[in-house]
Length: 218
Image (tube, rainbow, N blue to C red; front, side, top):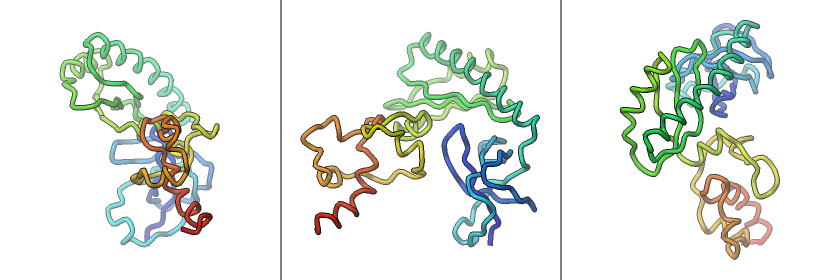
């Protein structure tokens, strides 16, 4: 059995199980964790629990320690730095007229690397952009292309229902959404109600379908 806690990474909005190293951390506590991308800052959303090793055989995420006041201060500093870096990256993209949309910049804890998240319809030749960013920021840069749904999860927003979008609040994984599910919600007559802020079919069509089937007796 793995002894884990569930940790939400604020920068990506993703919640995942993290291995513990003889630690006991409570829900609502901030912590420093090691992920496949580097050292990051997270929030414990579920306390210590055990899961079978077979469920996550390749689990590498690890809780390093409960966040100290110094860690919190450093994290807040990175948030301010991310704002400045975002402006620099956007300026360089516009200067080179690259067909890509900048979504977010993330500074990993310790400022050893900057991750640039962007969306694009196809492949983008960002070699010259990368060179200029390395010179301007004096650190390692990772360019990461993401889909529109992941972008919506990272940025958040308000859905047609008037509430924060589901992907930002609680959805962790994106399942395929079919037109059949949309038709069951009787919203096909108004195309604007089919899609969410990501431009894709709304995720709620899928997880509402079982209830609609039960109500209609289909």
